[in-house]
Amino acid sequence: MNAELKNSIKLCGTVCAAPVANNNSGFGGVVSFPVEISRLSGTVDRLNVHAPESLAAGLDLAEGGRVKITGEVRSQNEPGTDGRSRLIIFVFADEIDLAESELRDENEVELIGVICKEPTFRSTPSGRKICDVMLAINRPRGKSNYLPAIAWGRCAYELSDCTVGTVISLYGRLQSRKYIKKHSETFSEERTAFEISAITVNTEV
Image 1 (cartoon, rainbow, N blue to C red):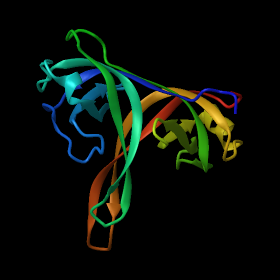
Image 2: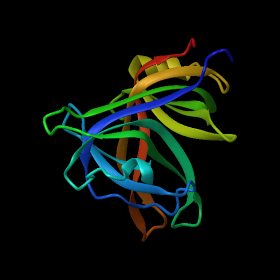
Image 3: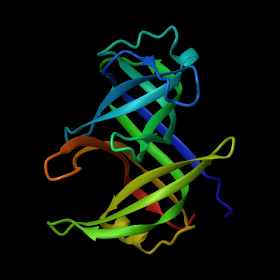
Image 4: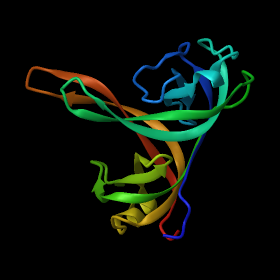
């Protein structure tokens, strides 16, 4: 594997709630807050941002404020309400700046990672082709981020031919998607899934 793995995200959006201490981050000295970013279609993605306290200190990160964030997309396993471990996807900020209110929303992700699970190629009821893929990207201290991505159309066909261990590059956005998790015939709950929606894919890295 000759390609250097990459993980970067740039956001510009609106703070939904003031930062709070995150005692489950596993890093220590971390605060968390949600940010909303609108797509061109009008759909709004609500993303969770984790940041070192030292980075957020001194910034007026009040609800309704505008921010620009650069960092990386990370994953972490946390116990779910059903007792099973869940993969949590969030943005870990390396830099935060206050933004002007007229600055347009931005959500750009660039990844170079290793496919760590066989891609799943499928069709929607309307006939659109989709491919789901899981990327592994190493980070310091022997840890890795496991990031789910989804591709459509031509990009889906390209990914469907890939195998575990293939290194690919991907450009897209981090999006949120609500779904209903059914636990039994009488109990279900609404959950939010996070995934990278690919705009371009290169399978020859």
